[in-house]
Every structure is written in structure tokens, then in C-alpha cells.
Image (cartoon, rainbow, N blue to C red; front, top):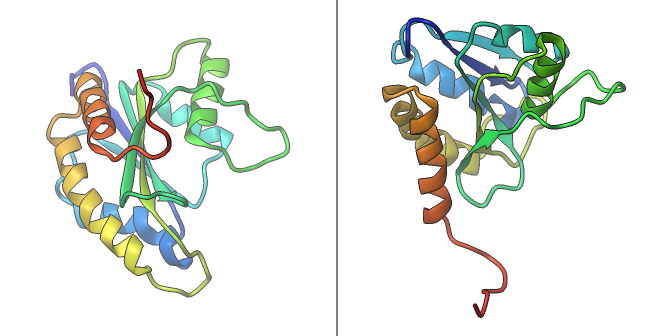
Length: 174
């Protein structure tokens, strides 16, 4: 990180709801390994107010449980062009970035999403086997992220993962 900016990590999840605990548990396992100067925001869900946490940041990471993943985890760049619903109190990372763009009249910092495979969210449940596997694999990947917390490095990791994951569906004849 440069001295002129900082990394903000949003950890989203509820430790009382099964696999929704994956992100907070990942943070707990990373304690003491986060880059110097990082700001961590832990919440059950994202709100419009979280856009203000991006002020002064030069990089953001959103970590949350994700349904429907084939792989143990997914890593992507958020574009910040998601519409913000006026009827919801919970936002996506892209919507938080869009709120920042609107209130600050400036581009948000580069932001990335680390989604951990999740299959159950019942109150009082522990982690499922798929979420436990995701947590282990995402831990090693997060260490790679934090070894060099720079947007260009993280974009290269997004591209490398995209090339390494299996493709599904019809193959092009061209």
C-alpha cells in the first residue's frame, strides 16, 4: 500500500447462521496477518452508510458467503454500476460503490469481491462441509492477496483464476 491510501476490508456475515459465518471466520484466522493500516468493517449486511468507509481508500475488498459457487471460492472485481434499490436496506458491493460515486461525485477505489461457497444459512447451524473447504482454500488465497495489496496485482489474480477454472457449456467451433 502507498502512504497516500489504505485498504478497507468489508467482512459480511452472521456467525449464528451456518455458512454465513464463513467471512467472519476467515477474518479471525487471518488476525495478525493483515497489512499494516488496513481498516476492517464487520457487518451482518451492507448499508448505504458503508460507502463512507471508502473515503480515503485506494483499495477495497468485500468478503462474504456466496450461494451457487462450483469452486470453493470466487474472486472478482466489482464494477460499481449496480442500481441501488430504494426499498432494500441491504446492498451488494457494487451498489455500495455506486452510492460512493453518487455522494462523492468521484470514482470509488478499485474494489474486489471474495465469495466463499455456502449452502446453508439456518440459525444455530455450524459450517457445512463445502463452506469449511472454502474457508481453508480462501485462507491461502487471502494471504496471497495481502502479500501485495495493489489493484494491478489483484486484477492479475482475477485473470489467472478465470483462466484456471473449468468452463461449462458449449464450446465454440471458432
